[in-house]
Length: 106
Image 1: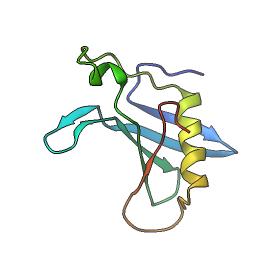
Image 2: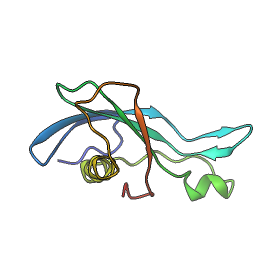
Image 3: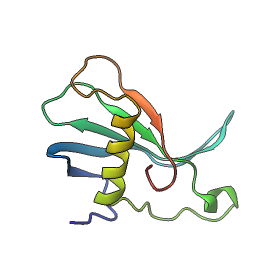
């Protein structure tokens, strides 16, 4: 089930349910230039979030107007797998862990 144009939802990856929400839209930072969007992931019944940062869209770097963000279940699933492969332990405690992915969520 695809959820394009959504700011949150739930995906099932390897038998576990993960809630996700748009944490931050792409924006321009005074000291770092354009920053990409960030989504927050949280495994259901777990306590530690993962924040997944995407690169800034190329259209923004070229000075084009913002377009609507395209997030679907496949992209979110790739983000969950990338975060767990990079060491995210959803059942541990602590501050959110930040991971950087490519434009496809890998």
